[in-house]
Image (cartoon, rainbow, N blue to C red):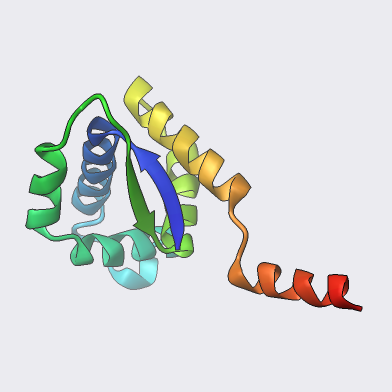
Length: 118
C-alpha cells in the first residue's frame, strides 16, 4: 500500500477527479478503456459513502494518512499528468509524486537485508 498525507480538501478533490472520469467513461465499453481508467473505476466502486462523509467532517487544517494500492496511485498519477489541472488538483498530484518517489516495495526491503548479512 502507498500512503499519502492528504488534507480533506485534497481527498475531496480525489473523489471529484474519480467522478469526472466515471462520467466521461459512462458509455465507453471496458474493452476500449485504457488500463489506468479501468483501475480507477474499479477502485471507485470500493469507496464507501461513509468514508467520504467522514473525510468531509475532518479538520481542514490537518493532513491525514490515506492508503491506497500502488497500482491505483500510479493510475491516478498517470491520468492526472495527462489532464489540465486546477491548483488543488496540482497539490494532489504533488502528493502522488512524493509518495511514489519515496515508495519502497516490500520486496525491495526484503532483498536488501541479505546483502548486509553476508
